[in-house]
Image 1: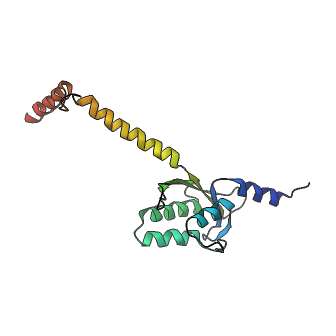
Image 2: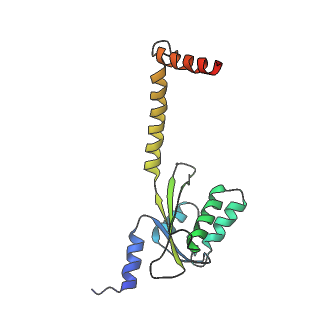
Amino acid sequence: MKVGLEQLALAILNSLEAQIAVFDAQGTILYVNHSWISFGRANGVADDCDWVGRNYLATCLISSKHGDQAGAEVYAGIQAVIAGELSTFAYEYPCHSHNEQRWFMMRVVPLVDLPDVFVASHHVITERKLAEERVERQNRELAKIAVTDRLTQLINRARFEEILDQEIERSY
């Protein structure tokens, strides 16, 4: 079976778990992969939605005009890549649904050998973010344990002496 290069490229993009959108320098979407379409469907976008021709930048700009700080930062980052001021732009953001917490990492880069064409990929990083939250929670608990007597729940001697030293310094 002979496979053409274009067919191979599309098959590769459609096999990726990351949501991929390819757009031009004006932000017009030229292509989205199957993961992009599936994510949209799973989040209320109509099955017959045609992503090609929509403006990726306009969506970010509208979001920022409605007070979404992430939309403004993403818009500025993408514009910096388009202008050649940045070689890549990455942004972590939450995208929670009604029944689950989700986080994504978005990356925008220019396509090699195709001037004025860019790709945005959105990778699910939920497992990493939840692990980070668990570690932060554990660190807070350990920090509390480190300065608290386990029996009385009062500060321990080491923390008392630390506070005493701070107060003595402050009194001078």
